[in-house]
Length: 250
Ligand code: G
Ligand code: G
Ligand code: MN
Ligand code: NA
Image (tube, rainbow, N blue to C red):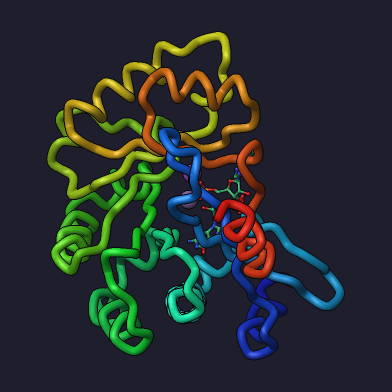
């Protein structure tokens, strides 16, 4: 109840900000993109984990306004970086299953892209596997429209739900983000290897999440996984720290 009350004013009080976690190409080991991650800092509660407050903003419907703020903020920042001459990065934004139920979602996204001069080619949306499966029909329609606009779609936390090869083939997606549980299980690579094989057959790009060690990174390279993200590469960073990270690679 406390969280719910405090969240109500969080947008006006400018308590939200975005962190960016680098994603690297396993071939070049260069940064190719970032995942935008929402952060909330309250004056008394301090930094509250998204795992605690996202369910609250979803239940109360605040996710609609906050989701628009996230996309607008990320696209505006992307334009600033382009204007400043940084190498252009892909940027991934998480979409809540609640946002996929908004009948105006396509119009809202279209408006924000126009307003912020964002090329859809640089944008990805991440949707969790479970939310896709639970809301398959509606979600498929929306994802098809987003893809037509030129935005890429990633299935987040892949492997934790029950996507069959058959379902995956019909879903309008471009990228699989393999859940960190499969990356971090160093004793059993069977599932990971079969996901990689399946993704190759379906011509999907694979991103490994939660890479925390050099061993994991090297193993993924051997397996021809395309991209990786995780604490071994970088924690989520403030925009200033991301700029230093990019500069250090140039
Ligand atoms: O960044 P962190 O590990 O603290 O995120 C915890 C969870 O919150 C993850 O499941 C992540 O997908 C989710 N999350 C973080 N930022 C956003 C966001 O901007 N929108 C939505 N819908 N979920 C987010
Ligand atoms: O569900 P989603 O994949 O969007 O969640 C992203 C969350 O995963 C972020 O909160 C981020 O902080 C967390 N994360 C990113 N890299 C790692 C990692 O290497 N290990 C662990 N344990 N969490 C990570
Ligand atoms: Mn994600
Ligand atoms: Na994930």
